[in-house]
Image (cartoon, rainbow, N blue to C red; front, top):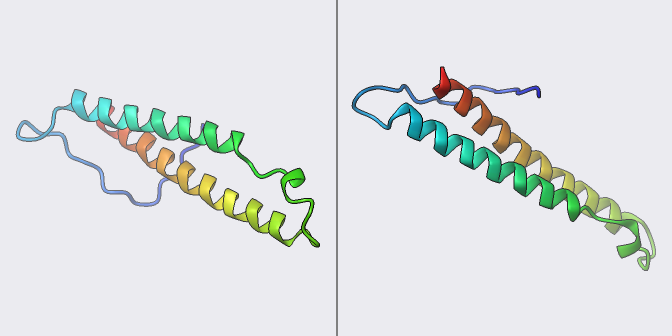
Length: 90
């Protein structure tokens, strides 16, 4: 898996803050949830048959573009969470 991170703020584990284990669990659980969301989004990808009664393909193309934007947003969140989990694991 390739993770591309563009400057996210990462926590500094210290004795006065949240424990390393708790941070690791929080980020890992959130990462799993984001991946599960991605699976569900992929199942709901727009299909041409649901847009076949329109006069043009414009609605289908728009639905695909919107779906792609949603999946990219979720992937960015998942990538950030993965990077955070790796950071606190060190």
